[in-house]
Image 1: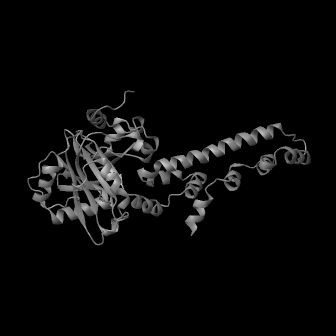
Image 2: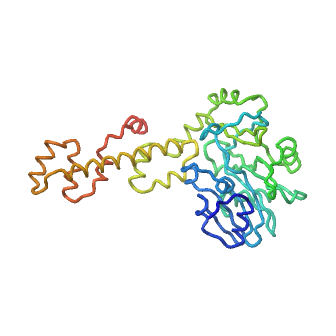
Image 3: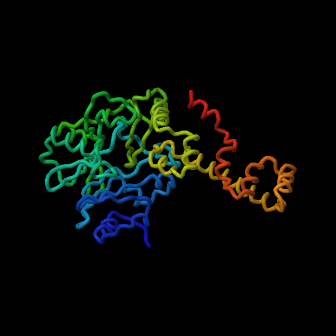
Length: 360
């Protein structure tokens, strides 16, 4: 099986009725009528492979019968130095990173609609569609353009407190057929002025990445950070430390919660919710937990195999003389009980300070 290497490959598979998209990457497809939206899932972020298919599946909407690209959002872009990624190209524009839901404008036979990047029928998209149609007239908008918005309204607050603000903030405009982005200045700014859309705040005071990095520690939690477009067409995000701290608290990200999720088999729920910036830390926690489980089980099994087991008394005397540190596990194994729950309970995980701090 050849990998997906182009948008045309995706269009061909869509028109053939293909459904098993996970053969090609960590991507889900949701259908609504004749439309399909492709979006990468948390496992793509967790594995960090980021093949072509995963990168472009960030709100890619296609018509299932014709293969037409109905809307094309941002390709996946990364935090500065995430996975070692960076660019030496000059800065083109620095804008505030708006803290809402991503919205993608698309056309239907009955008018314009807005989808979020993973769901054509989400409540955020429904709100944005109603807000769009009651506040804006898009007559004359070029047919080839996908407008990319941030959706802001009180019930959709993430971290930043925008008060009672209700808005569609125009982040970018992209040719849905060629994939080319319109320059923010002057094209996107002209579109915003013509149709009455808000724009993210621009920061011309930053002349280099170093300027941005120096400024990040000064941001409070009501400022998420910045998105930077570079002269080589790359785009990176920079997030403030206080915003990230509050985000982590709000989402309940901790070693303790991760440990409980691994034990309960619900770790996927954490991976689905975890912001990109914390994924590396969560991956480290999961690896630590799984490593402890494996090493302990191997050690206990080896000791159990070596122990005399004719009588419980003989077994107990041997354990007390040779393996007192894992006695609880060995007696559980002798009694035919699983030892994994005991490992979760008795192992010294080394994160007690964090757990205590969360309780205060």
